[in-house]
Length: 463
Image 1 (spheres, rainbow, N blue to C red):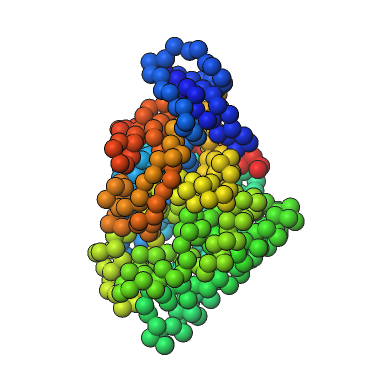
Image 2: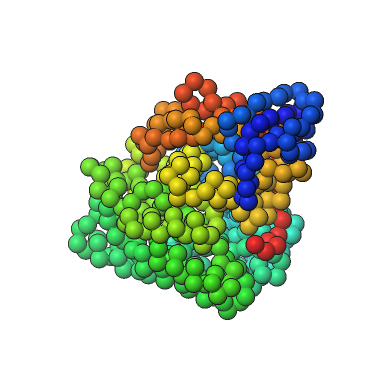
């Protein structure tokens, strides 16, 4: 099967030009002007963008958490991703106690088998860091194809500083990358106790229980561990300007500190927790939404390069029967997380590019190119010959009002309900196969479950 896309605006992280893309089988074979290849299908993309497929490196599909499980499995989650222009996900794979990294990976790959609609990889989440697990890091990086490892500085399954140092030392040897959920456990514990004593248990108090200083302190401490070991870290879902200032300071000193933020921290503020009744529970996630000035600082960090990636932290729980499953009388019982895998590209284009906060090239960089480079997805992230034909033909003028009924995520709400979008995927290809298409008033899935495959990733090679 061959495909020739003509006359589109090809966007890379370094520039844009009107041109053509020729695809043969699963690969991009040529990119240029006035290409003359014969093809089974020819598409005129005049007036539209040709973008590399988005890579979402922060998803939680079928994740057990807080007494329940996220609503999207590998079928529904990856179908939704495809409809949003996401062609690869790197999902978190949280280790069970006593489980090897290999068994952890095989367990989740088994869940994905025959269901996943786009390509995927996995980040092992290390929560039981025995000496055997530390020794297995080498195999995970060099043999399993999973060179990135998630750790938590908060929750009951957090790792201590000594363990973090061991992981940083071991990953440095082989080209691994430690990802850190950076919040100070004891600050959160202290605030929870104070709020409970004062009977302040409504959803808004979730934000009060996890103040900015909890993130700032943990980010700073993780950076010190990198300075000590000469290794590298990646801060997930950075939410605050004070956390960002620590990242910027470390990067200015030449340390290998990378960070992502998410659309919710760029677009939504903590006033959402004050919505009437229990509605604020829709936004209970960790870290929480912040005040408006933090949003402005994160946009600046995205534009200047202090933040390298935008991901979703997609962790969907139904509002009805999910967020309230353990009652409405205590914010600590509300499952943490929100849906977002399908709305990533449309939000960043509308709120970032259209509103002049970031360039079109920068959008491609933080959604695709940087992500591929940092996480070792060597065949992804660019419109270039030799890369996988993960392509989004994007209509920059298409208008769409976000409403859950026209999305595909297996959850009963979206945090962005009613937001007006400008720019939507028109056609989406995964390794040369069409997987989504704009139809009537929304994007519809046109692919096949089971098409996606597990992608081994390369060790970190510098950024």
